[in-house]
Image 1 (cartoon, helix red, strand yellow):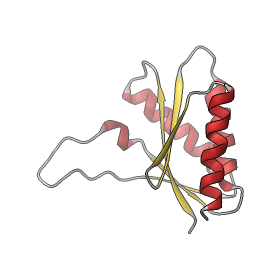
Image 2 (cartoon, helix red, strand yellow):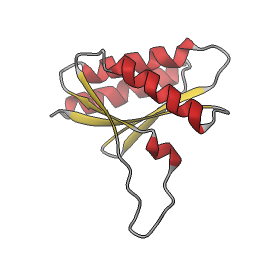
Image 3 (cartoon, helix red, strand yellow):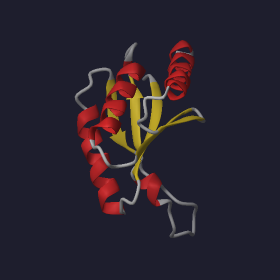
Image 4 (cartoon, one colour):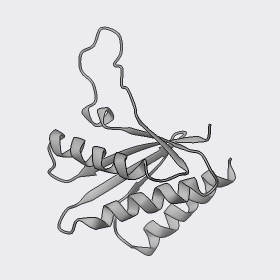
Length: 125
């Protein structure tokens, strides 16, 4: 199997129900990309505890299977970020402890950092 990318979505002022709906929509969209295998992660808290991180419940585990898969994943998520005007959304990507947060802007700095992130992880394969 290829690299695993942990994806978390957020939208300012969204409640848990809205975040869940966002994750379900993106999940269906990502399942259409051939180079990806998509699943939701299962969160288990430490023994004897009841509290869990609500954000972690809606984490998507994405297996990037083919070359160019990470680029396809990022392109799909950036398209999602830019779709709804008037909302403030973020996408958090994590690969082996390396994290980048996309804010949907088209700033040159965000694009440069994203290019470095993708290149670093594609070269590591």
